[in-house]
Image (cartoon, rainbow, N blue to C red; front, side, top):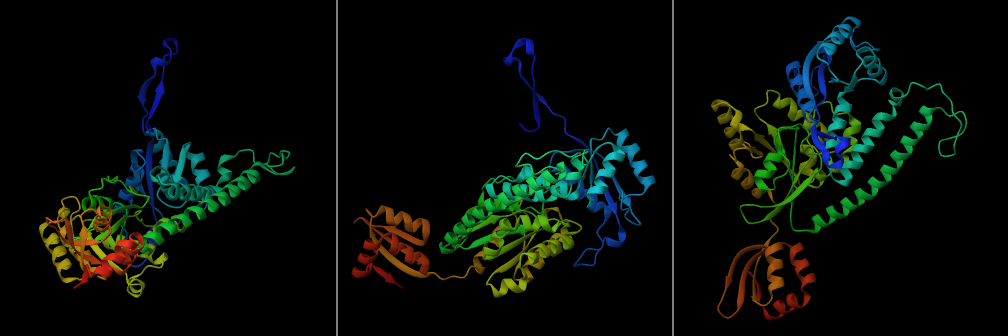
Length: 469
């Protein structure tokens, strides 16, 4: 009910309450365009202002803002006080007033002073790129860890901007113990309280991180390899995740649609099982403290046996987006070189080929056929997903050894466990009440079976009913 509010006729009592839709905040999106700094790190290519504006509008749409106006503002230099020149500030003030704007989104980094001065000049709330991304993170995070990470990032962001919230900074007040001693200003007290909250959250996150590490340890002991989806936001990761697992994870045409890692089991064409993990999308110019705040979430990638880098092949800046993702992965210590050393594989998944013209689509498919770690798919249509699964299947290191078990049918728990944990290649039930299983067992699964069913494992070994081929 986040987008609704309630009204009531007090004379008719509580039953008169009715739901009234709340209008979306009217927003104006501004893209400051400093050409001298528009070259993308790693590619040397120039980002287009149109593409940047499209992405900024997408970010605003991600939290349901009603974008009523947009503008790209070329800048020769950045003004320390207001970012834009005086004339441009006045010109924009007129447009903002004309459109009855409530919020201006500046797709760039604003200092606390610039943000305060623009709010004063335009008489509206101003949000920079970092603040907007934090708002999106706040709406999209659902797990305990995700919520804590968002709050931590938000507090660190606000700590330097407390001055915006107070007009009485020179006012002194006496101390009340927990608020501090006499002579402490309001801003100092609030900054200290924020710092205390930061410390508390960091402690809570340590506990959550330890819990996640225990879960990861259990997964490492499990027989299933981990396959992680990464990519630029809105590249189609969640759609591909849904296509492969039929999990129905939230997947809309919104930036940052996924913030918390989602995991599902996936059966490969060979019958082997893997864990598929969907992760938060990356984006250009993501502030480093936000990447750090979500490091624990992104560390799922570090544990993955295979990393599927999902790319929007139909986007005009797909190469630039690719580099953005590689830059973030490198900040986590994941590069193609380190992946080889760690026994990982990184696969380029060229998604949205259904949106390409015939020639470009053919080129993408041919590239995937030539390159050993590339796949061309349409997650929306399902095209190429079978080939992608076959590729993943071929990259899984096969430690299985073929084993034959002859089990009495009344050993139902053990048979069910083997079906759930081992690779059952064939099963035959005979008329004498015996179940004949041809299995693929990894050393880990074999050890777990012996630990779970010690008497049965011993009996099978002693009678020679478990025969290795």
